Image 1 (cartoon, helix red, strand yellow):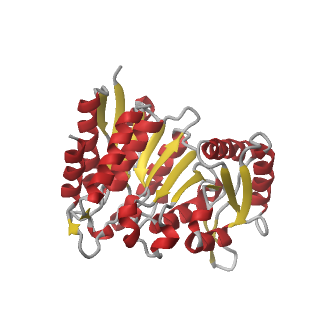
Image 2 (cartoon, helix red, strand yellow):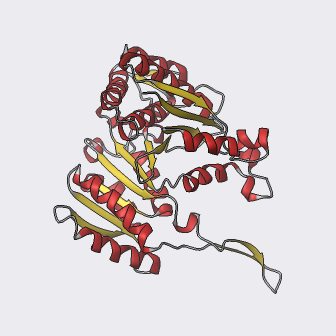
Image 3 (cartoon, rainbow, N blue to C red):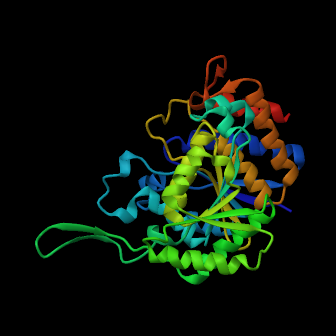
Length: 359
């Protein structure tokens, strides 16, 4: 049975890294007889330039019909000056997440042994690191209303946003986190700011309630400022972390640097049925776009997550992850993870090396 994948290269380095991930997908498609059909679409700034909107209805229709979505990245300074913020590239990404109800974001931070020297922390602190960050993706301050910039009576401008979660939103992401912990080492740390934010007081209460359904999982709680500190002080104390949209955005980037580079960190954004959108955790990196030096491994590993979580093609996913490890064993590094004694390669060369390791 054919499985349809929507490919959205996006902006900046997106097209470069997605090109390499597609090569890898085509290789495993043939090798494992997966029956994958790939279709391209526009989102973000690339869509705005053609259609005048960051999320055309054509793209949204394709996304709803697809079995899974592979995204590159969106955004860049070219579109940052658009006065109507609803037309900026990031709104296309947020529209996909909310329109497809992709509420659960899984961000693994795994340190490959070959990259222990690429981390900014001491090898003994990060070696063996394997964390999963579960981030709520369609609520919180990024989506809360009212929001905007208004002019006060005295003529001064004021920016305002609304940080809001309801019980059902918290319960569903809590269950994703507890289920993930059950498949791992049965430890879950919930990150909040319950000492000053009422939203996260409720968050903590609901996590404790849901935790009663999972007596095997050890549940702990940590304020976000302490969690950020502990991530760089003693990261291996964590197994699964669960938090809201904004805190998860920040903590997952911090966790990425533990692994040596954000260019190594994939992510999955899933709905209640495990249909999802897969993308690297990093952004569009417009400063290096077009130079052929971007690291495609996070996107390639996102494609592996897609095969594992949404398409149930575990053998193909395992093969891709093993191929990435093989390439690192060969000493190949893009600029972001390069260190002395390693061979510096381009985006395309890294992608080709992963393909070669699969054959």
